[in-house]
Length: 140
Image (cartoon, rainbow, N blue to C red; front, side):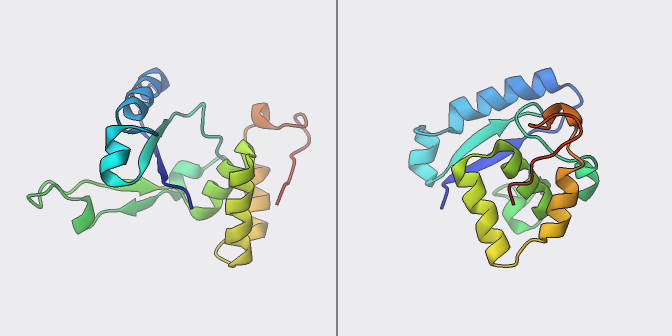
């Protein structure tokens, strides 16, 4: 139901990633000419915005096909998408109503595994635990 796409630029320098995320949002964010032309907006996120479980980079899903190519067909770019359960963890850590509804819909449709989500919630770095270092809130 959302008309937005979150983009995280992977770079070892999170300062540069944060700056580029702001630029992306400024050019293609909500209410931009980009959104008006294409029917969706792009939210730039950085590693401080997205809270993810340990090991998430190892589970990224590669996307490379005709849709990821330049108009000429070359070069063909590569996109990396979060594993579906890692995405649910990020959404539950944000804990906005729209995120809870998103995860609930995936669970109801049996598109994600609740046990995997629960396990990965416990793998979120402790500084992001809302109830302290020894407790993880499981809103699933």
